[in-house]
Length: 169
Figure (cartoon, rainbow, N blue to C red):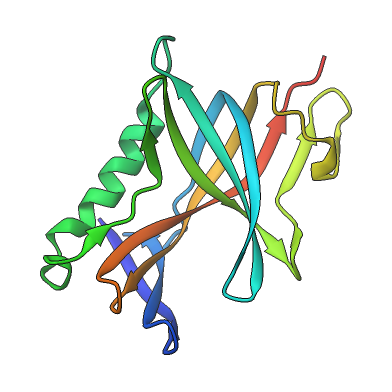
């Protein structure tokens, strides 16, 4: 069970955004361990930069797919809302022939990435320019917000990476 609290209405784009809390009014946090993030990107959207990182699970490898199931369950939860019956879900899960990919946002402030990146053998925070996409990482993730676009009849959940811990040899 989740609770939605409206925090922004963008009249220009007809988008409503809601914070997502659990039944005890806590921010939902999810962990993903020992996963690869082969690529990310920076895009310009709504006059600001968005920094994204994608986690990829290979279909051919044995993986703990519970993170994928948690996100699917969270996205599917909103399909039962009467207001969204004729809306399309813009999912964060992309399935390709070889991979299952999940899209995430990084925290930003003034177009600069502020999500914590820690290299485990150095024991201090490093800049994202030091991020190594070939190494396994551990993440702490939260659903940043639930959004509805009434103009395009779409809805979805923005997923935010809070912390990244990367093991460097």
